[in-house]
Amino acid sequence: MSKPVTGQWVIRQARPGDVETLVGFSVAMASETEGRSLDRERLRQGTQAVLKSPDRGFYLVAEAASGEVVGQLLITYEWSDWRNGVFWWIQSVYVHASWRRHGVYRRMHEHVLAQARARKDVCGVRLYVEGGNRVAKTVYGKVGLSPTTYEVYEEDFLLKHGSAHGGSSEGARSGPHRETKKGKRTL
Image (tube, rainbow, N blue to C red):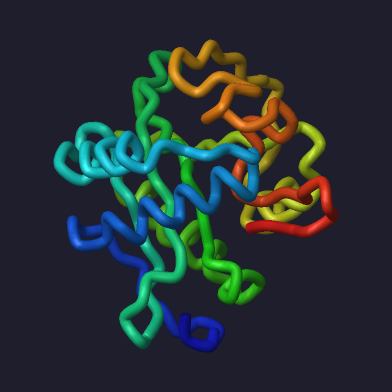
């Protein structure tokens, strides 16, 4: 990775040639935030499925002036009958360690908001965060997101908490910004 220069990147939609970077970033994010070891081939297929089918969502990447991809996020969709519109869910956020705390996520978030607000069918953006993750809550608050009264429940048929490929249950569904058990902060 090149040396970070604050603000010197372009936010663009991911392309098929970005697949290996997206997979590598998602593997790193799952390991850092949830202690999970993901099946790379399943992840590659899932990533390619999004790139091939825009109805599933889309990836945005932050590209440095050098041309290297230094951050990513995934947008997926949730229909709201109450609002007669679509929420964009921000997922799979990852910024390469050497580029953290340089405004990469903020810039990607601003790009998402600008795109979402320009569409009449999008009613808002959402993401989830682990309840005790103060670092993430601070970051998300600084970009204008507010907590809701909702909690997320799930029954995951593929990635079981505590399984060989599922990592520990601590930190599950923690989002991209959290303090690890060792006190390290990840973005």
